[in-house]
Image 1 (cartoon, rainbow, N blue to C red):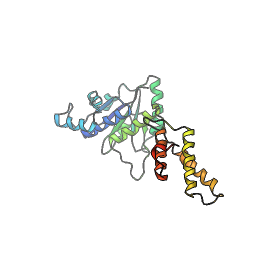
Image 2 (spheres, rainbow, N blue to C red; image 1 turned 90 degrees about the vertical axis):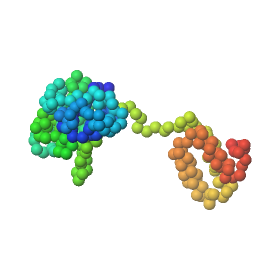
Image 3 (cartoon, helix red, strand yellow; image 1 turned 135 degrees about the horizontal axis):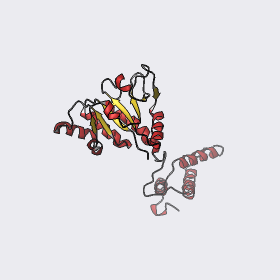
Image 4 (tube, one colour; image 1 turned 30 degrees about the horizontal axis):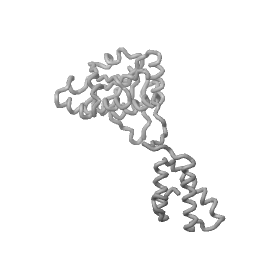
Length: 252
């Protein structure tokens, strides 16, 4: 996995936001947090430290390794490429990217040995233009234009999520079967033939003309269920109970 971007919070006001940002970073594999002139003196007092730690929900490693800087210029000095997150896009000429476009750019730069960073802040007003001009590109997160306000941790999480997803190998769709295994076609067919026979005896099929389409519908429904061996056995038991067959004979 490529080295992730540095996360910079510019003039954060609330220690809870710093803690929640650390949580979002830990969720998404981001590692390095830098703080520029946070409102509360650093290192924090005991009360503020507890509030921040509680908000981080255990992301202690991020907070313990966080670095504090007196200016943005100092915080970004070692970075090769800097992104500024902002909702303002028309006040100056600049490269504007969505998170989905920016993250592959970050990965490509990391692959070339470049160190990248993403600036966020402030809580109430966002980044001021004097800080935005220090960045190589802007990141604007597409949201509901009627309500696009995010807190710091939410914004970091959205960037971090895009970063993590580009390198995550989790299957998009998987059937979890626990201790059982998917039923075989033979087990499906055995159950279906028992079901069809029981339905015949109960007079379920109104006419022979309707029978083929009804059979296909029932078979299709059972196939979509993607049952396990244990589930097939359970349905054998259900069918036996409905037709009054003793359990010891339910598979006969």
